[in-house]
Amino acid sequence: MPVDVFAALASPVRRDLVALLLDGPRPVGDLAAHFDMSRPSVSEHLKVLKDAGLVSERRNGRHRLYQLEPGPFHELSDWLAPYERFWRGRLAALRDLLEEL
Image 1 (cartoon, rainbow, N blue to C red):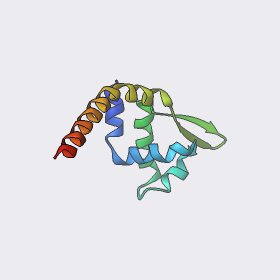
Image 2 (cartoon, rainbow, N blue to C red; image 1 turned 90 degrees about the vertical axis):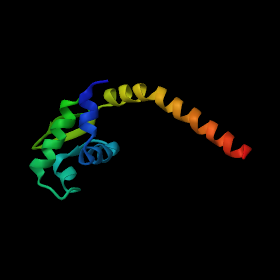
Image 3 (cartoon, one colour; image 1 turned 180 degrees about the vertical axis):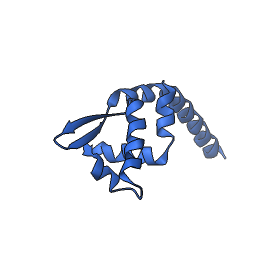
Image 4 (cartoon, rainbow, N blue to C red; image 1 turned 45 degrees about the vertical axis):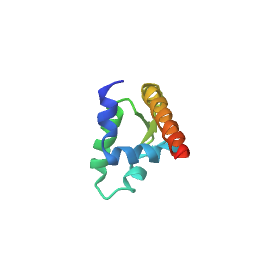
């Protein structure tokens, strides 16, 4: 799992951008409208996401459209799976203990 993915997702703004892109490709202007910051600042955040491979950019006329790239998210999910199983087991054991009490 590349460290860049974790660094890119460490920012709340970038996590919000990822959430906005769940509905499909969007132009940078549309994305910037959701934030109280300049469009160049939003573009900087998008560049970090792009450099980490989380989003891709393509031109559509005068607009730049950004979209999510599934690969890094699959890798992240695969990396987190053992931890999810660990915590599910722990929570099940806690449930069993509480039922006994």
